[in-house]
Image 1: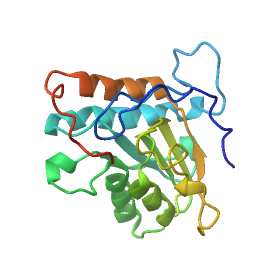
Image 2 (image 1 turned 60 degrees about the vertical axis):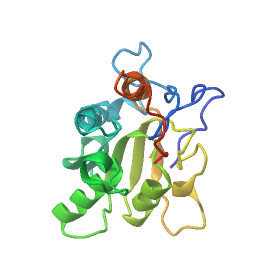
Image 3 (image 1 turned 135 degrees about the horizontal axis):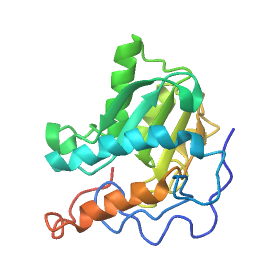
Length: 203
């Protein structure tokens, strides 16, 4: 199952990505502030709120505020089995993206690399590395908040997860709490501490 294509203009003007540039624009915001219910996205709001909580801890180490959680089988009602946030600056590890951290922790907890039936929830559209990690971990679905038209690999620049040439294609749902997810990144990159820093590479 896949979600319908994004409406024209839904991704905003020029997004930040994980490194620098303008902020990701909102897609459909499935937060409680929305007056019109969204039965497709609303059930995922609690998990995305947890991912946002993880993201908000990242700037403490100078990392871009992106957070992720892995839910066990059960869709939006699955148990949270792992969490992660960006830790590239904290660890000096170029692969320490929120999704990778969360997927590694989930595999460790479950005792194996196959995360069958699990859902990866992340505040920003995964990059090529993280999209590939989602495919290789065999997660059932990926739910993300803000689009990343600078480096996104789940529909923006590439669509790795739904590439029919691969042997596993997770279900994808985008736009859950997109406005909040995008605003967190906007605020981070517009903060005085980051105002002069636009040298980070995406991802």
